[in-house]
Image 1: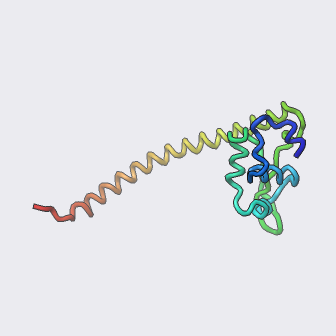
Image 2: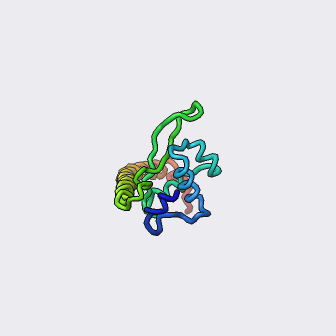
Image 3: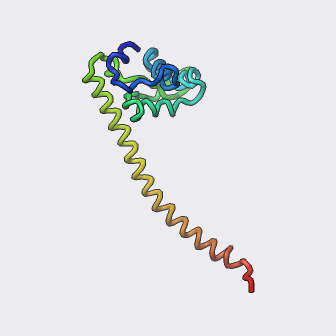
Length: 144
């Protein structure tokens, strides 16, 4: 953890009592860590802590993952990119640049897909509104 502390920029480290810090500490100490271990040590899901660390909130830690096997089960393994441990500010910045690009790529494609989905949902809602009007609204008694 000391090597991370040495090169991390101001504001990149969570509060020492936070779950995000615990996640960072576990990954720093253990290297490749299976999902089951993280869930056990963090008391359940850790996705939001991972998002905090890899996102803008803590300046884009580059946390890698791959599929692997742990205790006979396929699952994701997570670890902090070695550049964060290099004690070299430039390498740490490189890792954060890669993490930021990945974060922004996910955001961009998520937004792009949301726009496509909105167009489809608008069309489907119009169809549902028309059917409702024809089948339900038209059967309501009129008051004279």
